[in-house]
Length: 424
Image (cartoon, helix red, strand yellow):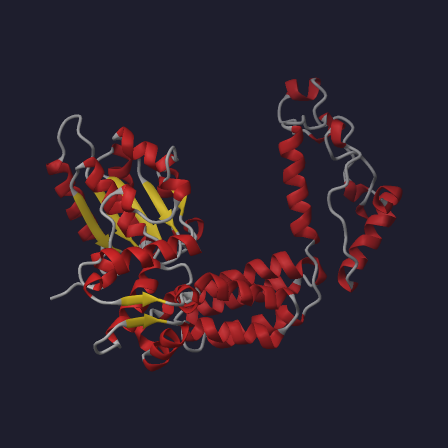
């Protein structure tokens, strides 16, 4: 049986690997680690079809160590323990640990992830995880702290064109044919930076031609995709572009467009929790203080989706989407924390003013800790002016109101409290 084109072209060495130059290019961190012969556990985060599994296989080949693989979809704690036991038996003194590759590690439960901790900590296995989801949401903190995190990017135009040329000229099956790449726009567009999707599309177009030269044109690609829409993985179709359009439509106060992109994600089989997380982020980042209830509603939608799943989950997601899209917008909190972080990085560890410090011991009291602090609730309107920023930064302004109706009330209160400081 002939293997699919994507499998036939799977790279076996770093030099054959396409894309991710920031990780595997000359002098890059991962290449240097592999060349040194010592690789630590790491997690690869990126969209489908960018080479996560391939990179794990290449690491194992370069290090010449046993390679065990588990799928988070079908494996349980028992399977994890069996692999770890095998790894213990296969290990030799001073040799590299076997590699345990876990695809879709974000689907592992907490107990499954917990079962990996000791083996990773003790070096019984070198863990390589692959995920399309943000690991900070889906991977437990103890496991994340034991692993490096590397972000893989969608392949760019040059990477994809190079892969097309290699497929046509070097693949054992395709090089037998007279294939002419006349147009590549549709191939690149439909691939969305996904190498697997690109090669699957190419193979589909080639197989649609019965004898004679094969001319790859935009029209031929579009015709094949219309005829066989299920030949493509809906879970990954333009994943990041669509969620970007979704968030930007909410930010731009267009509920029609936001619902359209929501429907595209639902029809594409997107994880409802992925959508719900984006709504929570948008509520905080884009609606913010202009309508603080937006964050409450987005969180409620997340909770509802977690409880009821599909297909009913589409309703609270749609409700939150429309509410966020039609709400007034403010990113003053988003800008404020960004400015505060920049100030912290610029000025370093400024000392806490003495009157704000905690004073649980007599020595601290004698040193002046807490001395002079004014308890706001002892004053009219629960406010009294005093310095809260470090001495070197006491004149800094960080939060700047954007004067939406709801936020204007907050701004006016700050003017009443602080006067000229908030007139800047």
